[in-house]
Length: 322
Ligand SMILES: NC(=O)c1ccc[n+]([C@@H]2O[C@H](COP(=O)([O-])OP(=O)(O)OC[C@H]3O[C@@H](n4cnc5c(N)ncnc54)[C@H](OP(=O)(O)O)[C@@H]3O)[C@@H](O)[C@H]2O)c1
Image (tube, rainbow, N blue to C red):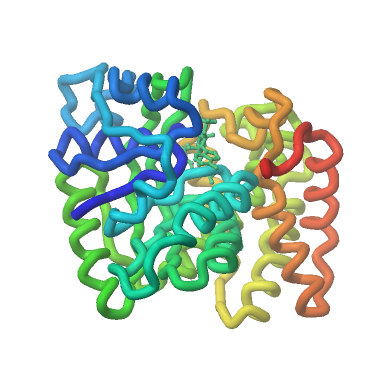
């Protein structure tokens, strides 16, 4: 099976490295020849804990990867993992669409595009700009941070949940799950993958803005004054929006998951805070922003998500990439 990686950053390189170590030979797309050369020379992985390494004896590994700067090269893949930030999705989808526009209409089918992006509706540009492609969404709890172009700190190899797809993509998804498991990335097929996507997005919509606005690591979030009320309000608004979207989500498990996640990632700085500090755009438009937008679309009120969306927008630098 040929796998492409669109977005050779933290999560893309983690998946590419593990798949390469398992013999799967994925192809990484980069935005510059220098970045492609760097990946070919080898990505350096540093495992934060023994559990973060598939082979508990290795604390560091260097993995040379296959890389290209040509989006057209990804057209020959069976599956492309979308690993850009949500605010980079529009430009990345446009690049793919332009590069693939000249492919013959009677040629082989386009690759399955499988998003690993966090949030809600981040994959929308790929659906809109590549209408002939099958676009699906996976959820991953693996965690990595990029310390340099080819330097990763691997925080953990948490589970990944792949969607159950209709034929002929069902076979591809099953093969991909088997490969990821062989690569030390525990993976399951989830019949309720939409629920999984919403659950992760809502948990992130609680933790990320509260941690970012207070400038604190995840573990300190539940100790903040007013945390319980704010978390409850974010979750209740999101649940009402999910219900309007045809998805029933109970509140109690979400509240529990927020506290568990804060505990399990206590020492982590969330990506929203890291992006704010670096003056980059953030993924807030696809977290609280998406909940507020969808609420408006359904004639619902989501004042707490709306306020957090605007508060983060007010502090973030940069614009979505074009
Ligand atoms: N990191 C995690 O632990 C983790 C876990 C679960 C889910 N996620 C989600 O996964 C997504 C990616 O996160 P990340 O942390 O991996 O971000 P990241 O480290 O910033 O990586 C994004 C990568 O996308 C590349 N890129 C951007 N636009 C592109 C384009 N048009 N064509 C080709 N490549 C492009 C960037 O290239 P440059 O190198 O040139 O900047 C960068 O390498 C986010 O939605 C995030 O929420 C991340």
